[in-house]
Length: 210
Image (cartoon, rainbow, N blue to C red):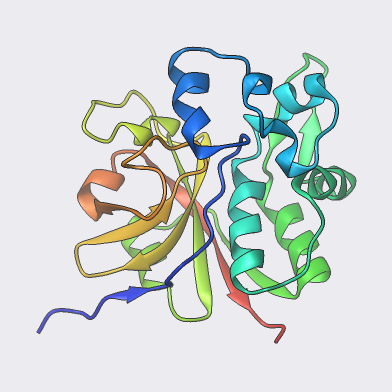
């Protein structure tokens, strides 16, 4: 007997940028993210700050989907970034880059701020992560951003976060904050395909506050 499908329905999808339709121009054509009329939708007002951070906020974008699905009140993404920086979730480097999203400070912050239990799994198979999805649970998985083109060969694993919100015996459903349709919102991939991009780590988010 095959395993039943377990999938959250109508999980809000958000892109790291302003509009889902603008991901392709930004990623493929190197368009200025601020050309998107909706670039201020996530609470940013400074164009330079938005350009710097939007491409780095895949994890906060996943969190925002989870919070809105569970109807947990929260600030704008720009304000969430300020809170995350205060809690060491992201760390600015001297070379101008950023270390983050750092899992354990993220888990501590999200637990205290939103009543969500975050189980950090620094080493886990994709199958192990998938089996953790249930009616009160989501998974954030580390994959390569190349997953937006799953039919193409990839050169690396990790460096990007996606939200897993459903599973069956063969694969998973997910939201990719930097995805391009048809592999953007409610995308489905077989486990064997996603494993090519998967970095072997992730986080399980469980609702504890009702």
